[in-house]
Image (cartoon, rainbow, N blue to C red; front, side):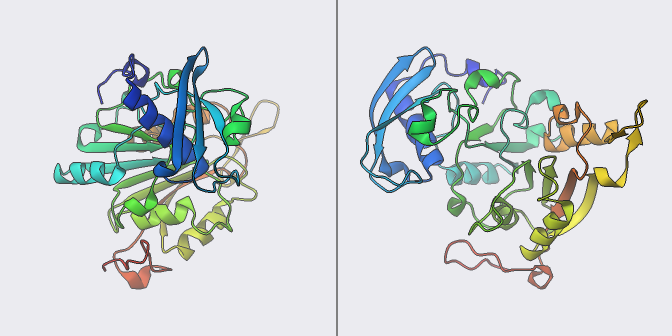
Amino acid sequence: MSEATPTNLDASLNKETRVARAQHIIAGVLKTSLDAIIISKITKTKDGYRVRFHSTQHTILGEQGTDRSAVLDLAFPVEVRPISDLIEHYQKANRELFLGIGSGVRDYPKKENADPKESQRAFFAHDVSYGIAPHEGNFAGLSLPKRYATPSKMLRAPCPESTHFFNALDYRAVANDTFDTIQMVNVLTDRYAKTTPTQEALRMLKPDTGEFVIMNELGPESHSIFQCQFVIQSYGGIIQEVVFHTAAGEVRDELGNAKRVVPEETIARLQRDYHISPSHFAEPLASGSYCVIVKKSSDPQERGVQFILGDKQPED
């Protein structure tokens, strides 16, 4: 990917690209396979592209065969190549692999972050909202609220070369011990889900050297740092460092109100090394907000669980 902003990369879209991106976006939102999404018509509108489709499989909407429509931004550079092919390509080139889970518009990799490893890394940014246009009709078509959208015009900052955007991750296509760095900011998942992003991240993280940075400033009461520690340990991870925890340090403003502050050098480090936007710290963080760096050991006896990819046992 060039240094141009993503919105400038797709001035013209051929029919094949439009169909491929529409399939990937819709399949990602509905959590079904690409082959199950049948695109019947794509029409350009003032809001983006209205896509008529139906699914040959049951989806989270609970129906199959029903004709639906959604408004998408097909200019958004959603990656349509298999993630396994891209990973293999970059591994042969000895690139470090960086994955952002739920990166959204704030935490996707940007050149302005001045990452010292930028030329040595390949970047994978994921968010289910990528390519969704802000349109009320998407609630009925995709069961998504209007606010759950990231059109291409929101990606204003240039991204590094070798950056790939995914609105869905096929975890089954990613082998164990793959990524050098994984970033996850404000991703609050159902603790009762069969497989969580945290569990998958630890499975995909390289042992010993890999870093999994978790930051949470939303709902810390129900997803506290102590709950995070419990989950990490149950999945076989180890909290290597507490980067910050606002309950541990607070100052008072001139009115005597608690004001939780993260040091400037910490904010700069998170931006530079992990592509976490400084905009998260524009206002004082809520009590209980935290950021931790997690690792996992190559010694299976130090892991809380054994990691499995499908029916295949990992190699120790």
